[in-house]
Image: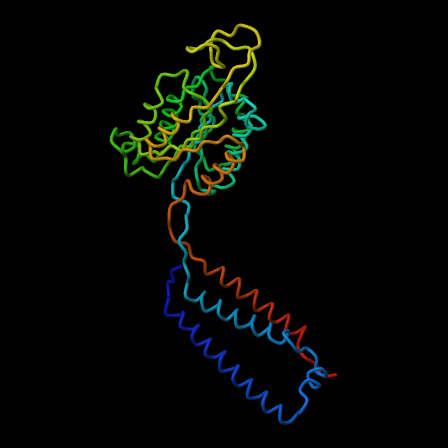
Length: 348
């Protein structure tokens, strides 16, 4: 904690001296009464309101004065504060493997709920965009401060039509391009350089979720990661699902045999494994300076998005908390007055 006017904290010393002096005077006064009235217990019983109740209101009053002394010193604390013009692009895999039920109720439903919790955690000023992808990437919501609009797009993810497969590299490139298009004009040239863009680093982040390996697309995952790195955009990746995950349905044939993204679609009902590809997503995060998480349960996924929602779009800074001490002082003064009125001793 830092104080804008630290010298005013000397008032706490003065307050402590005043309390000690008042206590000493009260003790002397009590000794004089002990001479006049030989049985103070009887006098206290007649007056009422003895014991610990006599101490509580004065303690509240002194605590209120101490809080005011701290408030006058203008306290500040270090915390993460919303960053101007910051944005986060949510990228989610919508391929058929996201219907696997190894993450309850399904991988896709768990991911949608986690993204809703993410929106509840981020600063209101943060611009959030949404990119959905399977065999190709589509912009579901451009970066906007209207989080309700983004949440509506999250609810409607199933309505976006994408070709089968998983195009991780193309999805990364689409997210980077969306960031570049949404930057202020004076920053766009910087972000388009092939060298690391230090000026834009930290201004935007990508939160990328997938549950499978790349099966389609023009760009390889490492090529998409290189584009994000060149633009100074960290990618936080989440590998969703367990190695035991499966989906059942009619599938076509991809490069490695039956797959949710294979074409053409023919054949009978099949159950095929759909394990995630954590190593690829880990490499993407390491390349871009982000962070990788492996989420095998809905709880881990939700915690990951909540933690990122509390950190992304923020920067270390100072926040004044004078109002907290003022509110505490007001509450303590009110409590001292009420308790004093209720518990003050009265002679019959």
